[in-house]
Structures are given as C-alpha cells and as structure tokens.
Image 1 (tube, rainbow, N blue to C red):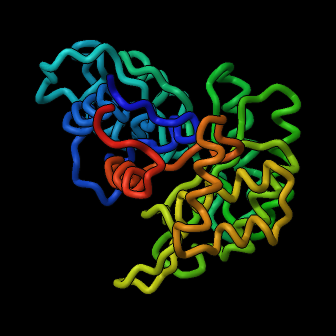
Image 2 (image 1 turned 90 degrees about the vertical axis):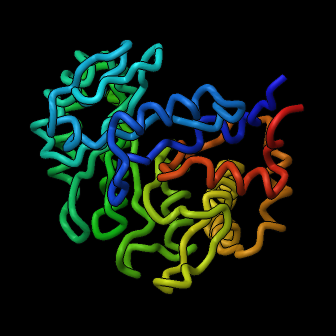
Length: 298
C-alpha cells in the first residue's frame, strides 16, 4: 500500500519545470509530470505550470488526450493534463490562450497573472484581471500583486471582487534577482495576516527553494522556507499576531517548525494554497528527511 501524503501537504507543490530558466520542453515536462502524478507522493503534487508564451510558440497538438507541442508526439498513454496557465503575455491575450489549451485537451485549473510591476499602481491591472475573471465564469484566477505600494488597497479590491462572486485571489512573489524582492519575516507576516483578515487564500512564487529559511551561499540572499510559510499560516489562521507569525517565518532551524506541522498534519492547510518548484522531488525529499512525510511504501 502506498504511503499517503498527509492532508496538510495535499497539492502544496506545483510543477514549475517549464518556467524560466528551465530548459525542459513541453513534451518532456508533460511526461515527467505524469510520472509525479502517478507516484506514491502524487497527493503532494499540484498542477503543471504552463507559461502562456509557450502555448503561443507552436501549435498544440492533442496526443493521447494531452495538449503538447506538435513534435515529437507523446506515445505514452496519458488520460489528460490538468495545467495552470501562467499569464506571461498581455492580459488581452489570455482568453485566446485559455481556449487554445482547452481545445488541445488540457484542463485549465486556474490562471495566474501579474497585475503590475513593482512600484506601479496595481489597481488598473487588477481591474483588467477582474474583467477577465468575470468573463471566464468558473475559472479561478490568482492576481500577482507586488509587495510594494498599494498592496493593502489591492487586497481590499480582491476581497470586494470575491464578495461579488468572482473567483479571484492574490499571489505574491517572495524572491527574485535582487535583495529587495525578498520580504523580511515581519513584512511577509503582515501580508499573511492581511490575507487572513480578509479571508483571502494566497499563492507564493519564487524564493521558496528549501523547507526552512536559509541564505544562498552564491547570491547572499536569504530565502523564505516553504515549511516556515506553512507553519506561519497555521499560526495566523489560529489568530496569531504579526509578531508570532514573523517568528515562525524567521526560524532557520526546522526544530520549532516540525512539531506544529506534525500536530496539524491531518487537517486542511489554511490560507497558503501552494507554490511552484522546478523539481518537485526536492521539497518532497526535505519533507521526508524531516519525518513529515513517510517516504516509499508502508
């Protein structure tokens, strides 16, 4: 009998193998993703993240019920691909891209798209994405909002749109190629609590390379840990204040994180929808090493 992934980690890690700077092609990514989603750890895996720019480069051809690039064809039987569309194209092109994926046999789980660059007013872009969400009834949308000026007002707008029935939620980038793109534990804790107060689930992108907070020896940037974020959201959902949430985010050793994660392992994950990893086996390996997921077979 295969080992089950505890509910706390269900769907936590999206397959970001197609996102830059990955050299993996669509054919290979689809095949590898199918291996992950039929493995013993399948419950940990979310969807394959497909950049809209890739969809537009070559005609997609349905092979064995899966949308892939036209050559070479996939010969391995695959029942269907559930994918997340990453909107790295203008918002006006998103409806056609969604339709293109669907016509190729791909089930589009949701769309993720940025509303503005850092320092820009997020409201105009957010309004555009809300219009898209209203037209695509039933297709959830994650609006990537910069962690800068206008953030709280944008979260208010998202909350209002959800109250009006739109399937929209925020996404935040917590890393990148510059130090200022990595929020401090206090800054990220404030964002998590702001989402908690507005009942907003959220996704994260970039920077979550390991389970615990650490400093990259090559860049010198201090990255957030995905286990830190998970435990921090559990604390926030239980009514924790910003300082308590920040303390969990700041931990650089797994000891203060493992026990809270173990205690909540059989419950649903609050707030934190998930994140993408170029190699989904890496976060799996760390969770197994920490004893939070039992590796292999029982």
